Image (cartoon, rainbow, N blue to C red; front, top):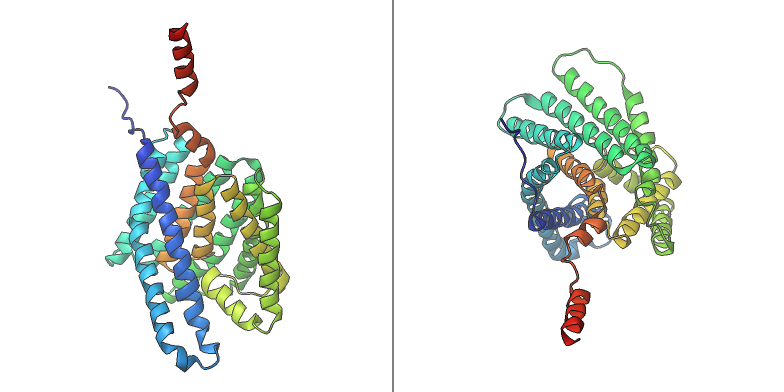
Length: 331
């Protein structure tokens, strides 16, 4: 009996998957900037009452971006899983299984089956598995950033699991050291992320990273350190206990990586970086965890190189052949 074979993904389906993933990243970043950042800090704006109308309009855009992100995520995760499975590689099949595990346990938790503990453990397993596969797919230099990402999730997510277990009657104990480990490894991940774009880093990408890093450091020094640390905790899962320069350098490194990947035509990988920023580090909620799962799945999918794939998908040039034929006929 012939072995079952997955259908190869067509050029159109791969392009649609990339477009959906880019749309998800764009919507998630808008939601992050408006709903999770602006609406939480707008109260500090002078004469805020006079801006109530524009504030409500902007908040409405943020809520729309959130619902759009959720809807796109329900399309992107299965599309990435199918695209990975079609590559006929055992590692890609494992990535598909990790995506399926997250989707299945999320659906079960939404239906009231299994509980929060099962979802948290399954989410950690899916994320760590995808991070390991991404590290293997992008080469040994990327073991460091993806390893740090995995450690950050194991630490922060492990703390969340232990807290949930204690609420359900298990013996509780001080596990705050896990948060410290998650903080250090999370910042280390950001600082090492340029290894992902090491082939494409140029003067422009470094310049953008420097501007972002200096701006972030200025925010920490300019009287907004407390607010910045609160936003770090809510959005990124980082408590802000390290010196502000560490987070500023991490922000600059992420910006450098994003711009370098875009300039190197690694569009799907750049999209994944944006999704990681929107998702944060830790098990905040199913939505943000889903963004991280989508990001790591996209990185596994993009490991072959978006630029090389786009070149393969371009129709072969026929101008030279046609000209040669015409010359032969004329002769």
